[in-house]
Length: 300
Image 1 (cartoon, one colour):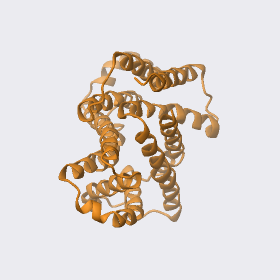
Image 2 (cartoon, rainbow, N blue to C red):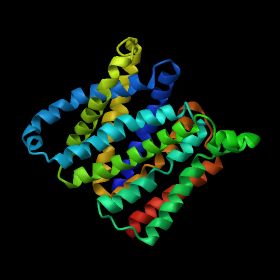
Image 3 (spheres, rainbow, N blue to C red):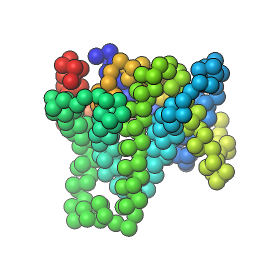
Image 4 (cartoon, rainbow, N blue to C red):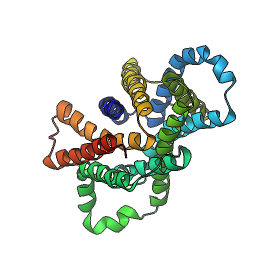
């Protein structure tokens, strides 16, 4: 249970992150700049860790570098950008709902990569968790239903294929990042080493795009201050809690615990933005909690 609680706490910090991230986006700071600053600053911080780990890193197998590429280059950098850009091609509500299927990817990969056994009981309670996560986002479902006669245009239009590809990439990327992060922990890497590799590899992948982005390093001191706070909350503290939790649970359980993020985001909006927590969302949270706790107590 401790592992799940740590991941839920990480989800809470990621939810707090949205109070800074989205206002920055609405204020004209592009998504690439935010993601790049995060990886740049965190890479500088974790270079100290990597310097101390040079003897071990010098003996690193090629396969381990590939795992770091997946959690950093794919999961941390490009998948985040893909998800953000998917909003330009699809209805935002549809993008958010599709993202809920990330655990399906994580559970499948955990079975093949980590050889985690999947019991029928686990699949049942995992389905309960997934239903709970969808219920929590019922506002997005309502927005889709309200389109009525525009449903065909909602799902299929000239740019929809690009949107679906971007969402699919982000879902697969984030799901794979959870599984291969667990793989690195099982191989004996420390949490800070996994975090450092994640951000440094992500930065390497982002560097080629720096030359085509004209907005980098042209923002106000206020923007850099907010980004720094966001980096401490979601980049350092939240990721540390996440990997501490992931170390204690299976990858498949960890991926289900990540579904608490939308529920924590609703709670954050309720506390800080006076957005009412509805009975339907509370029911969804109970479904999510029931499924996660049962899986841990029964060791499914």
